[in-house]
Image 1: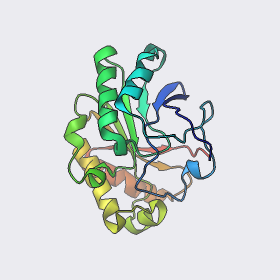
Image 2: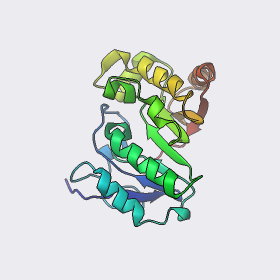
Image 3: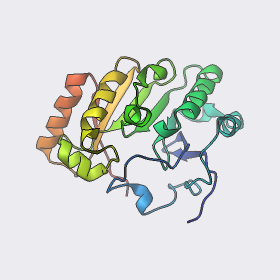
Length: 205
């Protein structure tokens, strides 16, 4: 497997931040099963987890005014590198006030760290986008195959709810054509009940 140290890369005009390849899930639909990069990126498999200094060096060399949004999302779960993520987000907020910062996550950050990490996001993160995938807990585990097991779905929902107290914009997503319209409505109701927005996103194969 080819590896590199691609920390920053561009997707849909936004700047994406690739911190780690660690992930507690082995999703059946994960893009990294079939590719090692995104459209305009180099290889996203990392030689090692990105350090705080490596991230800060990469951000310092980049003109963030060129990008509408900075997104912590790569070939791994960004919450696995929480300290590095928070350092990067603070740098962005200190040097580019008003620059939107988003995390794309599977929503298992509290399970990963064994505590509620959502207060740490306050003032640093503008949007948390969480992969809901399905309204059914059993189907969720079949799809994402989390190492945390059957309780992962409820923990993900609880994480999203807690995020709404600390982050201005919490979004939960499913992928178009992968679930029924009835299930989409159930997902919409879940989001409504916890104060999150619901978005059906396009499949990126």
